[in-house]
Amino acid sequence: MSHEWHDLSISIATPHDTLAVISLLKHVAQWLKETGIKQWAFLLEGGDDEEIAQAIVDQHTYILREGQELIATFTLAGSQTEWDRHIWGEDASENSLYLHRLALHPATMRQGLGANLLIWITAHAAKEQKNLRLDCIADNLKLNQFYQHSGFHLLGTTDGHHKWQKNVEPRA
Image 1 (spheres, rainbow, N blue to C red):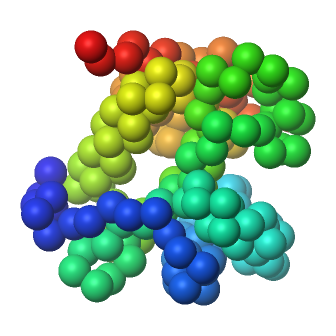
Image 2 (image 1 turned 180 degrees about the vertical axis):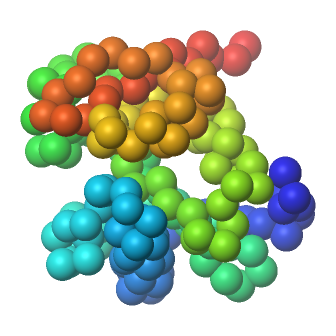
């Protein structure tokens, strides 16, 4: 990884960060659109703005800064959203964390940062003794390969979205 972790800081986003998080997500959505990847187009129309803001208020959204610059964000929640219930079905077990909106600024991509964030997220899930779940659009080949190479297992497809899960063993 070309980034040094001592320059980076992960923290829970605060309401003060809401506009910056939404701006980063829309920037990534625009970049995806320009590169021909049909993912997150709804974000460009403000499709998830309220849900994004609520996840920040609920302290489920994390931000990664390099110095003062926001370079990545993700949301990690132990309760299902309406979307999760649609994709996964009702999960009453409460043994999963759901990962949403993992986004890196395009200038930081292809440097190992995403893989290292997934390692951090997995360690966080292990502390909570929960499995890590996410979904992504089925026809985004590179992203699906990324999750497979990161130790996730494909559990099926619902509504054009692959369902990935990583079983996390708690550390003693």
